[in-house]
Length: 316
Image (cartoon, rainbow, N blue to C red; front, side, top):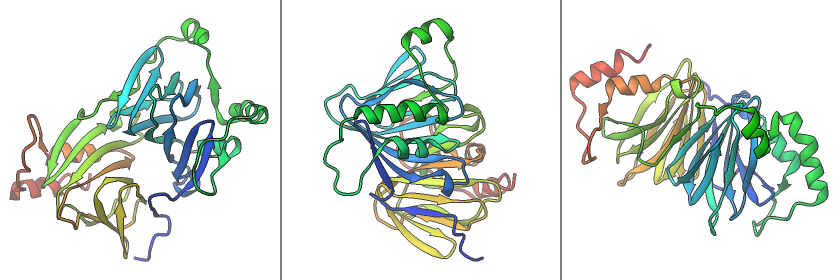
């Protein structure tokens, strides 16, 4: 098979960066690279920074806090998210983001479908050189924001509007650190943060801790696109015939039909996030993985029965 040029390997620090007010956005994947399916970006939220109360008419948004502490408002709920928390806000839901602390916070954000990158590119300030501090918004910036937002299906909401015109949207997720269904798959440890049932069958998201020597063999998916973001350690990816070493902050996108392999070639565990679109992999993990109910100690080895279970549900 020839190399699928639609795959992505975006190293730490790479990606188009913009200041939007006091927040720094770095785009790891945009719609042109994902077939319009989604946009993924890193977001550094300055103290006091964030986004005012608003709603999206077309996009679902998801967030994964990496560092620090961020306050989220989902409709009338106020929730404090620390590192390892996952938040899902479906289209139509009123939401707000604010860093109420005295230090910057960092998170990953996924918008589906793509398009938010075009809004940020229009209203943000391009970062070309070393990052120092965010330039303040001028009156011209504010005019540009107000003119651009309606075209991006983004609608600002006042607190009065929220209280008088909308009932609480009971959808949406707030999954705290350590929460989620957990499974051993061989010696690797997976924690499901969101399933297809919880994201409108858009995707599944999992945390994976790969043991030394762990990972997946060379394989490909006929239906699913997979994306990965390395959080800790070092992981070797094979995309078709390319061998690439990913360190913390690297984003990898493997489209359906592409042969790929994941291996932790080091002597210490590595950690990553994985998105599967459309979902379904969580059902395979539930069938072939070993459920973790109590304290994690060590991974039980795969038996011949486990291997039989792995391959029987996979084609489905």
